[in-house]
Image 1 (cartoon, rainbow, N blue to C red):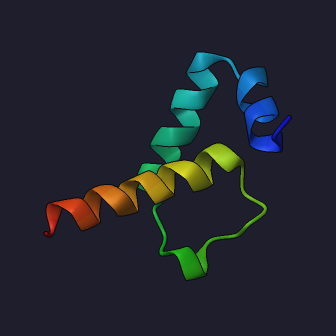
Image 2: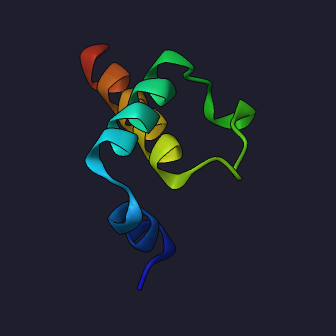
Length: 57
């Protein structure tokens, strides 16, 4: 099983929302991110990038 999937399944929904909100409020470009951050945070920052790229097209 993928590590990110295992970690996601262990989170309760409130904690996941908290992590995703933190990621959006504290967004950093990819080169400034710490790869040791929680996978949900990294995933949400990637989502935000994709949304920004889509909106600018």
